Image 1 (cartoon, rainbow, N blue to C red):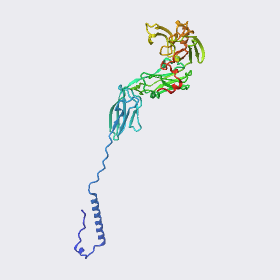
Image 2 (image 1 turned 120 degrees about the vertical axis):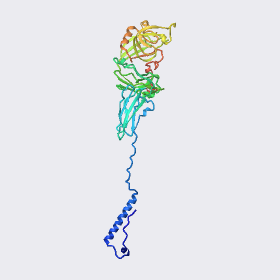
Image 3 (image 1 turned 180 degrees about the vertical axis):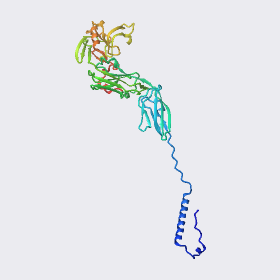
Image 4 (image 1 turned 90 degrees about the vertical axis):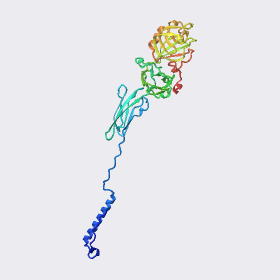
Length: 409
């Protein structure tokens, strides 16, 4: 409550004596001062000091690994994230304890692996985070990768098989998958080929498991070829995924082309475009005509057992045969070879009497075996037979370039 001044004496109340001005001024000052104190005290409402504002609670530290929800493709990285702090340590290991490498983002709120994972593998993730109050949070997760059916993209021919001798000018570049491919167009986006000197070319599926690459013409001698199938983790369709990437390098050797003319019964040989040999030969008989068109040598074998029962002509049939044949150059998968045929020397140059092969005298067969190899070409004409099917190993050159270039994925 407010303070009051002392009461006036009776004489003062009666007005007999007036207070001196200095005294009156002092009393007015005291009165105004006390009133102000009363006013200030009344406005405060309390004698206690104001309480300080409370600090908001710290954000909780949360570590997450989104990939734990379901198995992931091994091409996807493992990502560790944190909120409410920063990542201090992250370790990812496979079941054998081998670490997976990775790196932190500049703000240390994310860690991402930077090397491929493996299929059907459980990875252990241990992460440590720290908040602004230096409180530490540790957490452990597991990440699984998918376990699909896998297919390999093999290169044909095997690069080490021809590393010392190179390949012929007719050899297509081939990826042979171990499982049928459904998503052919997508797979082709992941196939790479370079040629030196540069030459045009295109991919073409000869069946569901084989994709070939060739140009409008044979390769130039001396060409360097590099091919890649970057299909690791790629969805090939129907639950099949690429098992791994693959790549190969080839060198094209000199041009060796033999022209087998069924009308003249002569095999003429050209080396780098120049004729170097000719020899009498016999093609398939009218009942077993050789396929026409360019054939590409896919195998060389000094000795082969040729058995007609492999294509349905078995013992008891007058046309049955089973014989060891020498100096063999395979030119199709349905049994056509260039080989030594001493039994038909009398007909060579005069009549076509074979079961579809190019029959040569032993000395001529030896010469061919010594000079021709994988990827070299034997062009058959005037045989009376059908064109070599594109799927018959290397029937690639039977497909017109316009059709081949358009593709069939």
